[in-house]
Length: 190
Image (tube, rainbow, N blue to C red):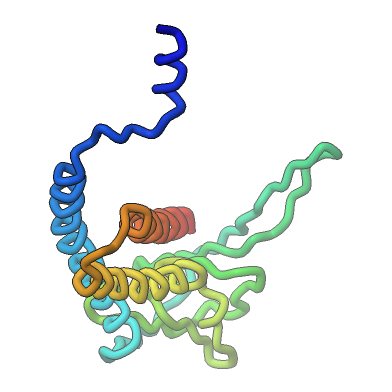
């Protein structure tokens, strides 16, 4: 009795019906395709809004500025370093920049028309667009582009490849979920 329990614990379960596994994969495959099409549509819409559609240019004034610090801990102690600056404007905009401060208070904000994402910030002398890390700028933009490519490619693979194994199917789901997690974390963190 003891040997059969030990052997059954370590042996793979071969008593599963292969038809049951196939129908289970097909059930999840359809809902996964629908979800990935929705994600791909939303992400591609965001990218079209960012890069294709015209933008609004709004003159504004910076009313307040706060420094953002990051703290690093190690076994030797804790260090504090400047991460960037958070700005608030007269017209109610808020944005974050990396490392360098905006030196003038009069700026022009360029934002997308549909989603109202701040894409460019300029003063009369300098362009601060590459320093913006809030909204869908900085690292979250790169993850958004990766998610657009990944979700579109995943839909094509799931529709074209009929004999996709279980591991490949799980990799598609987990990679797209990981990209969504990174985008959400970075978007709400900055």
